[in-house]
Amino acid sequence: MEKGTAQDDKPKGDLKPLYARSVVNSLSAGMAGPFMGDYAVKLGASSSDMGWFQSSINLSNNLMQVFWGRLSDKLKRRIPFIIFGGLIIAGMWIPMMFVSHPSQLIVLLVFQALLGSMAVPAWTALIGDLVPGARLGRASASINLWASVGGLLATLGSGALMVVMGGSPQNMFLVPFIVASVTGVASSFLMLYVREKKQNQRLSFKEGIMPNLIEIFAEARGNRNFMRYCGVMSVFMFFMSICWPLFAITRIDVLKASFLQIALVSVAGSFVTIVFQGWAGRLSDSVGRKPLLLIFRFSLITVPLAYAFAPDMNTLIVVSGIWGIFTALGQACETAYLIDISPEQHRGSFTALFNLIMGVTSFCGSLLGGYLAQYASSLFGLVAGLQVVYMISMVGRGIGAAAHFKLTETLEKSK
Image (cartoon, rainbow, N blue to C red; front, side, top):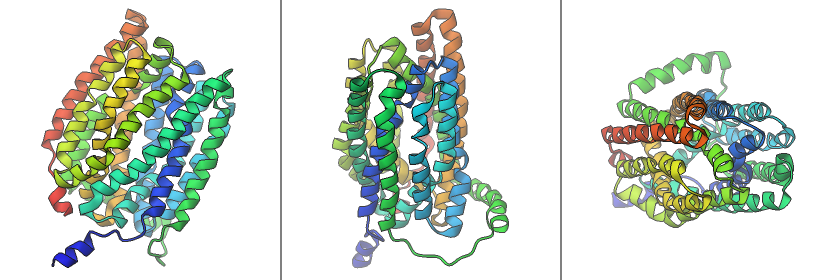
């Protein structure tokens, strides 16, 4: 019996290509992704523009995932979606070098997200396919650790490079966009080294995909743990996303940050996350997912508070390092919890449905936050107006975090 249990704990395939893909893909994402909001502000985006910027990306990142996730489940294939999604994302960095207005950037990012999102549910499902439930916390933490290493190096290098390049926003982002595109293509081809069981099943689009979207919702409604998690996270995500459009405005227009300082905020958190990632993964597989989720959510209450009253960028860099500890806990338990509560045969679909719900919720939250900030700033001035919206987000995050007490622990089920 013990021997069988030990066998069940072993991965169902070689995970090395997954680690390699995580590193290279994070190099691509880290070169440009962390700076897109700041790029938009440099191009002249207002608070309401940033509301549309953030909300449109939130929604488009998740809008097509139900379709992609369902298609992945029906075909029982993950790798093609990860490869083609990655290639689309990589290719779309190039035209972003030539934009001159925030609306142009929004259109390109929306298109990138709509098609590139096919990789997201397939990636989560592939991890669930290859890693036994009892090791999901450690495996997720380890994969995220290597991704954090790549992202850290890329973001720091990109921030420093943009300071050296100087000039117009387009000139500063020229090399980072090119590197993001090249490494994105490389990360997609690394997935060719992952082996998954081939399926000879033929699928009719009309009969096999579209009618079954209704079945996904019906299946999800019958899963109490999944629906409760969606409800709790919807509350939290709405209030969390209210202040997302404000971060770049605070960094660029209030604190007058350089792109190197912006990079250091991200790098400080990523470095600490890397240090604590292994410990967090072991904790997720021993203590459980729910305690870590609670700690992580409550820690996020401090984010709008710090941005509202930070006197300079150095303060945000230091605080970001502290947030890195809690981010490690979140990365170790979030994916594991979602996989735990998703039926094995519907992992891609459930992941996509969850992300769609979060996308719609954060679309509403970010759009409201952008317009609230513009209105509040017209009444109280830029700094005080932003602070009002940050405080609304902080209180709402507290309510959403407290709602996580209603969740059910899933570790025993995964074992």
